[in-house]
Image (cartoon, rainbow, N blue to C red; front, side):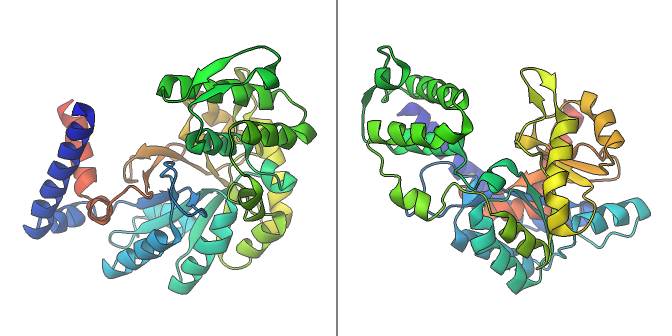
Length: 349
């Protein structure tokens, strides 16, 4: 109870501070101070279900549409990623430029984000991972998280799946996380053609009906035909690895992942792909030589911040948006208020 109250108090205080900053002109001052810095927005996907289940990286179609209107209302120019980086180096950026990026390439991106971007005439970059796009099967680990989150069961014995008794108390968050780790490992070790059958058994055990989830493609990526369509309707499709990883078992596999990703995407886009997003935003500087050797000219992270002249081309920060980000908080980000706070914090520390 105390923790919930503390979170609510912190959120209320943040809202009060934002309101004061907005209506006393501090937002406007921060906007002027950060006017030559690039705001790269990062979106994950659109939630296609009825009630949001808690992974707030997924944004609702309504909220995404509202975000695009908010950018227009604030009068911020939306430009493509490549143009933004070229103009940065030339010193020719417009004031307060916004770049829209979208990760993974979920089916919901094709269904809802593409039409909204077209309607507003906004360029965007889609970092497309290709393994599950090619297979046209649900992304099993994200689907597993969903099943475990919404199951009505409080106690589960996965012995029928693992061959030995193993009981989990799902009212305990740690037990829930352990269950996910067990099931993910179990599914990951199965041959690809048997993974969905195994997830089907998991859903039966946890009493979750998969029929609508699968038919409406809640956890599917866009198909290759849809990626081709997006690329020819103005979305700049770029690299995000084939299997959503840059290492396997501790060994670097970035070069192979880039090769496999390109092999599938370049025929769909009809152009060389040179921009990259780290899967889950995780990276080390040790991979930068591999990026350069593979003709990658930029790489984005999930570190919060604006891109300025000092930002390394292989460690570009972004602003992560999602369902749980309020309209006022979104404005605080785009205005540069939060960026000034981050810069002051780094300076003082």
